[in-house]
Length: 207
Image 1: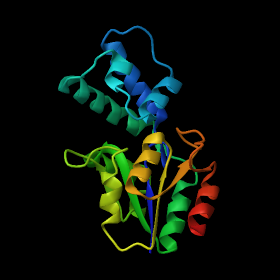
Image 2 (image 1 turned 30 degrees about the horizontal axis):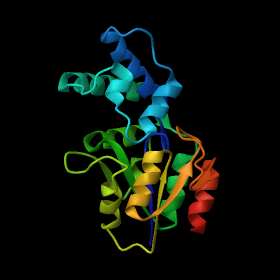
Image 3 (image 1 turned 90 degrees about the vertical axis):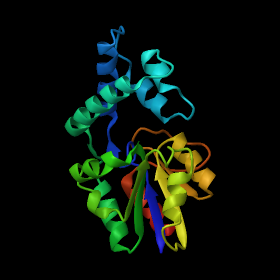
């Protein structure tokens, strides 16, 4: 059986506006001058090692109040703005019809994922959903991918994502990686890239 693992934001779901609106809403509440550009925000969240509290708010270690405020606003904006990329539902349906094991590995908190995927109409396609929690660190740590790989006996496995964090997580887990360039990410010089959902489907089937 082939195991196909997907990242969520920027790969399956376009949540860029939700993220950017939330960051700038919090900045305004903090009295910071000027909204940050969407390009800067999206680039920052996808780069390993960035201190996002410092980058976005000038705060080295945001407290729980700020984190909770961000999360509440993000949840509202996600509901309003986020949606699956065109063709993603067909890609996932095709993989399930072919008998593959389909999983999700997202840096978003695990308890938020079911609602997000249901609202986007793609929850039904996943055999296993893994998100970050106190016991599972975020990518580029390979813990999520390793957990999924240990859940079954797979002949082949691939992780499909859109960022350097995803690429490094796959490398750290010792598995094949496919970088998609239709979402948040750009072309990577160190791995295979696809620019359309159709190209992704063809690549995975040829694996």
